[in-house]
Length: 84
Image: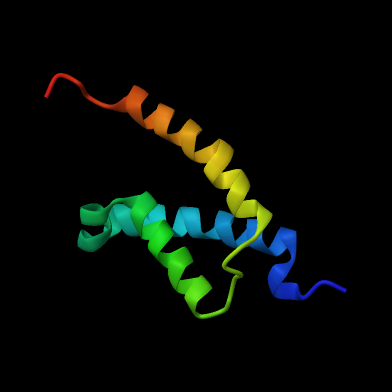
């Protein structure tokens, strides 16, 4: 039986919960707006992994880095203001 902390659905739930929380931190706090939502989200995930709440290695992270991060980078570049 798989331990609850390594459950695939639990990892995806934690990652999905982190995102809106970090967007709120980005919009409402000075530190969040200084660092940016994605960096704050990554720092929170690192902290959760360091505390042992989520695993440090799981296939869900591979999906994020292989598919979602390149897609997010492309979307970010499409939204960038190149006139400045």
